[in-house]
Length: 151
Image (cartoon, rainbow, N blue to C red):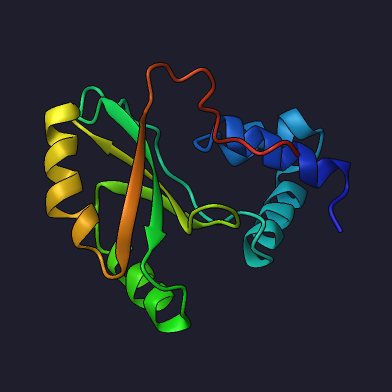
């Protein structure tokens, strides 16, 4: 179970993953040793799954964010497995989620522009195993892109 101090540590780390242990301890009202022990436990128990930097996609020529509904030709375990395995190898795909509803997967990808997306669609997405149909939703404006979870 997480207590208030654990939750505070998680909130602070989500806001700034580069915060020093000393500053984290000060902001939590704990000793550095106690904070370090809580941090290690949160890592060990899987509450913290990793660290990374948020980068500007426009500066990396990935300015177009797209969501794509993907319907498969068959919904069998082997088709799901082959599709998922292939998706994991595509660097342009940032996220892929199997969903319930009118289609099978929701794909989130970033590319340079619409011309690059057209190439991505024809050369990669439509060639993935089992893909029968896609529907694309280019993002016109990112209203909220906060990766932090409410803790």
